[in-house]
Length: 225
Image (cartoon, rainbow, N blue to C red; front, side, top):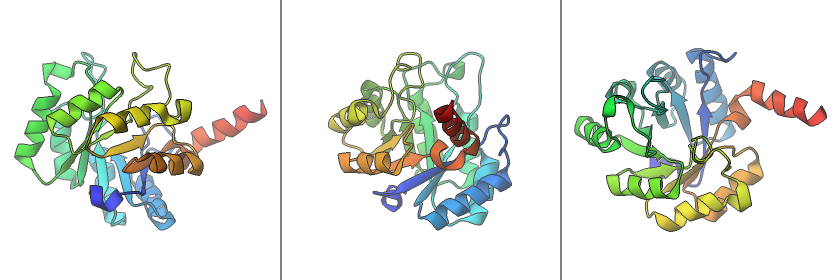
């Protein structure tokens, strides 16, 4: 999949149960619109959404399952259960939280990587990380690529944004790891997407700026308040 999305735009088509567009059918149509607009890949949440998307488009899919657990802050593809669901979905790549936070039930990220490789070695693995150290650790664990997805979304990076200081965090990750780096997290404009690729990102994932009309509307309303 990495070859298919190289130097291109991956569009994240996700809507959680509390959001107005929550529907596998709607996500499949968003994916179709993204494909017709030139996207080279889709990032999607849940087996059901991925199956619907794959019935609609021919693009490769980065699959995740978001699920909350009481004993952990990790919620992106947190356990073997989510890995099993994603393997059954037919997605070409699985993304999982690769931060240093404890996982539900005490399972380790290394165990999940091994479990996925044992069950389907053809599926590529993306590490969603929040720090440079986590990116380096993910590369050592054998992930195929790392994504800046969680930078700014953990308790220890909550004051940071991916785009701060001309994407300084992205630059730091690119300096320290030799596997492909995917830019993701508040990439809100075409200019920001272009800059990520100019800096050396293998690809970039854009979600809210394209597929979350409620958030887009809120940004417009905030500008006129």
